[in-house]
Length: 512
Ligand SMILES: Nc1ncnc2c1ncn2[C@@H]1O[C@H](COP(=O)(O)OP(=O)(O)OP(=O)(O)O)[C@@H](O)[C@H]1O
Image (cartoon, rainbow, N blue to C red):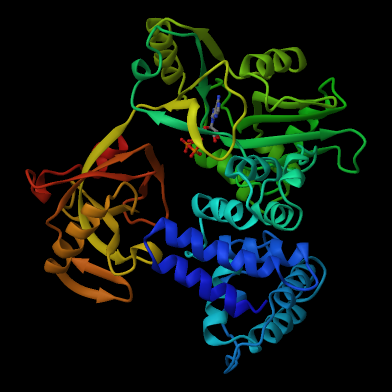
């Protein structure tokens, strides 16, 4: 299959807002690739990954900089999907051992054969900035439809396999039986279970049933695979399934001390101060982002391992067991590493625990259903997080034209707070979260009316519109002039009852 075929489908999927049409378009291309002669599981898997906007290689170690000076594009499309996949695999191989020159040559060779549209798409794919990949919400139903297998089976297989590519290949070329036969494999990351969210503890702990209330640590999610017979006995994966084993030697050591031959564990690692209180999130974040020597970092800023789930132990898969069964097994295996939790059906006990967790400097709680199996991929009622919500009133300074589904709409807004000392408005973050279609339509019109200047896709506006934002906290920032940035800002509503001089200040944000 030609790469241009995949890109065309991908563009058509991004261009329509109808979910049904998206699923049909994707299913059509998947059927087509499954019918290729001779049938190729690898081809199906790569096409499915490309439709999702992801690299089968996960990363090829080339950044924006390495893609700056591209050769003249080819006039006609000729690239085949598997050729591209081979080229990217070779490119990846040059990053470890090869020289800069051989990498540049590999980039030139591939991009010289790509049309302009293919070049742009490949840059997006390689840098992870491709905005038009199909989400699970449409890709998995499309796989189910094209293969004529039940969608829950596809979902479960993707949870266990981690990525949709190989699951699409199994579904399309071998059918339902191949999906049913798929098992958790120690050493292969699976999709992490995610939490739903509620504004307060009372909404989840209502006195009708017993739940576990877990401390929610603001660190890094870690999936731990232990297999003493493997060449690398301990492997660590992030929430997005990137392997970071080499970065956290002290975690590897902790896991090696557990009394198990094989295990798959779920948890969080976090840097704590001498007083046992969590250090700011960036300190933990820097441990996985930094390219400095991991051994030195593990001495200067060690992270502590906390565990909250056990998915496999010594040959036994536990994903389908009720949570209580998994917790008991975890308590038997690693009693000292289990995250602090209380099991209760009493709202006041849960409330008190929540208050205590916050007083100890943590982020909030995750309320867990003792009967729920480990279900990845979807945010459900099995886990519900509760965090104290902070809100602020800020001024919109500029807004960016949207892409993909938001093409033609002004989407990402730049948020400003007042610096009380100078009276100036200072940018503290951006967000495109929390916007309904109605808000998008309204703000597009509103901000075009306030437009003062344009710079690329950024429209600068008169700073008049106040917006109420919810956010999870502030972090120090070198990018923004006020030195702080909001974490996870999302729009609650536009406020016309406040003027720009009544908004939050840098100081009020800093003090929470
Ligand atoms: N005890 C815990 N149980 C489950 N998750 C926990 C716990 N402590 C911390 N976490 C973190 O909270 C996250 C659960 O929330 P969610 O599934 O919404 O992930 P998220 O989108 O990364 O959210 P957030 O940014 O709020 O952490 C997990 O990914 C994990 O990193």
